[in-house]
Structure formats: structure tokens, C-alpha cells
Amino acid sequence: MNVLRPAWYRLTVTLRRRWAGYLGLVLIIGLTGGVALGAAAAARRTESSFPVFLASTNPSDLTVQYSQANASAGLPPFARVVAGLPLVRHAESAVEPVADVLGPDGAPLPASIAASLTVASVASVDGLYFDQDRVGVLAGRMANPASRDEVMMNARAASLLGLRVGELVPIGFYTDAQAGSPGYGTARVRPVVRIEARITGLVEFNDELVQDDTDRPQGDLLFTPTLTKTLLAAGTSSGISWYGLKLDGGADSVPAVEGEADARLGAGGAAWFRVASADEAQVQSSIEPDWIALAAFAVIGLAVTLLVGAQAIARQVRAGGADRMVLRALGAGPAMVAADCLLGLLGAVAAGALLAVAVAVAFSPVAPIGAVRPVYPAPGVAFDWTVLGGGFLLLACVFGAVAVALAARAAARRGRGPG
Image 1 (tube, rainbow, N blue to C red):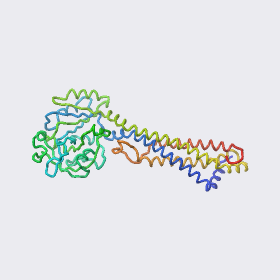
Image 2: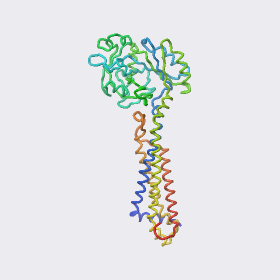
Image 3: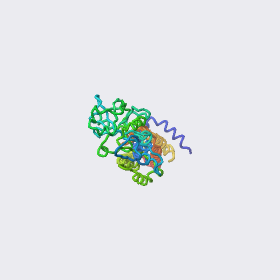
Image 4: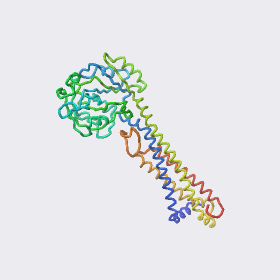
């Protein structure tokens, strides 16, 4: 006997008095389940946030900071040496010019770069920090690499110098000899290059996300490759330079390249190394408590959803006890009685599971949390189909099974009264 047509008819004629119970079940599954699924998706998004950000910056495998005594005009010979090492596939560089933010009288500000050593100037030579190890923008925009009068800064530099995005500030660049002269720091020593720089963006470097002020005592100003050409020709280098290296073999080649670079430092040269994989491990360790907390919340939320949802289904089954007595009296068999009980419940379960997916998607903009969030390259609404699809199936299957089991047990009863 086909039980679906009479069960459907019964659903349509009794929905007016049953709808509140069905709606409650939809909301219980959808809201509590949606929060649980949203927390699970947020945990996954947070756990993967730094690898996603790092990949978006086109990272170097190894960064070499080189210091050379008695700096001269142009890049040091070490630049050609390190770029030509056997395992180096691609290299980009930056230098530190002697630079100061100037006051109205033309003298460096007290908290300026070279005068106080609290803010470092970084000038990209050929795209480092612009297209390789690209900085993450917290506010404003990236400076135009082709412009000589646009500059970016990190948050610490903004705080130390009292500057804001959008400001126009005078910056002077000096030779190393000028920086060592008795009058340096006053208006008597005129910069060899002076620009009126527009601060276009507040940025963060991809290897500085989790460092505190003890590890990173200096702020940073970042200048464009176009300006750097002028600065190198004018001899404003402080003797410090950086090299972002992409290596054949990736992280596995780091020890060999470090050894080769150390062997070719030259007289008066010294080098320090930063390994991208080590930085990634450090950041992952720092954000681990965040995603673990979200995952734990998701597990608790799912347990609550399953418990409360199963109780709501049981209440709906018990509420139909009187109807089942009437159906049995009219000659309906167990299959018809179970179908009468199940059709509305299964529809509510499916609707609740869909609502849970929608709630989880609506919840997604809160992730990722932690240190990477300000520079995360893909914020906003996200669709984690692994969590959403798996969560939908889990909720639908578990609650569907509970509904079927309770309806079958209720249909098999022959006693009197609701049950």
C-alpha cells in the first residue's frame, strides 16, 4: 500500500496546528548547529590563515641581512655574489639609506630615523617587499613602485613618528659621511636628496606578525624602487642591505646557501639569516591556541545541537500520540502511522540542516582570528565546503535516523494514550 499520498494529505491538513513544533525544530537545528559549523569552519580558516597570507606575499625561502663597514655608493659586491650562488633561483634586494623625517626648519625630527635609531628606512632595489615578500596592507594602499615620492610605514613607525596614512611629510637622505659629521641632526647639514613623501599605507612585513617590541625595537619606512635608484646613485646607503632568495629545493637548500653566503662575505661584511619555514612555524605556534579553542567550541556546540535536537524530535513524536490512536482505530498499519509521524519531521530536519549551513556562512566573516587577521588576503564571507557539506550530511543523517527510530517505535506501540 502506498502510504506517502495519505501521509502527505495528513501533513497538509494538520500543518496549521503542527507548524510551531516543526519551526522550533528547524530553529534548534539551524541556529545551534549553524554556530557549531561556523566555529569549525573558523577553526580551519584560522589554522590555515598564515600559510594563506604567506603564499599571497610571494615569499622568499631565505632572507639575508648583510652589513658592510665603510659603505659606498651603490649595492655592495655581496649583492652580485649572493644572487649568483648555485642554488639561488631568484634574488631581490633592498638597502637601508641614511634618512630622516624633517621638521619645519629642515632639521631631522627628534624621533626621526637616523637621529634616534628607533625607525629603520628600507628602500626596495628591484621589487623586494613590493612583488616578493610583499608587505600586507593594514590601512591605505600599496605605494606605486614607479613613484619616487610615495612611502609606506609599519604601525610602530607611525606611532614613533606621529604620522598618519595620507600625510605629506618631508624626508631627507644623507651620505654616510654626513651622518658622521658633527653637525648632523641640525639644519646645517643639508640632505643630498629631499622628497615630499605621501604616506600611502600602513603595512606589515610577512616575517614580523608575531614579534613583540623586544624582538623588533624599530619601526620601518618602506621606499619605492624608483626612489632607490636615485638614493643609490647619491651614495646614501648606511651599509645595511637585505636579499630575498628563492632557492632550488626550497627550505631543504637553506643550510647549503647559508654556508655559501658566509664563505663569501668579504672584508668587513657580516650576515644574518631568516628562514621562511622557521617564521611560519613560529606564527603557527602562536595561533594554535586560537584555532584549538574554536575547534573545542565547535565540538561542544555540536554535542548540544545533537542532544537538544533529539529531545525536540522526541517531543514532536510524543505530541502526535492522539493522532496515532485515531489512525490505528481507522485501520492504519504501522507503516502508515510511521509515515504520518515522519513526513513533517524529516522536512523540518532538512530545513534545519540547510539553515545551519546558512548560519555558518553568515558567521564566516569573523574568521580568521588572531595575529594574521589584519593582513589576511581573503577576508569576508567564505564557503568551507568540507565543513558545510559534511555538517549538512551529519545533521541530516543523525536527526533523520533519530526521527525514523522514534517514529518506528511509536508506530509499533499498541497501547492506549499518547506515546
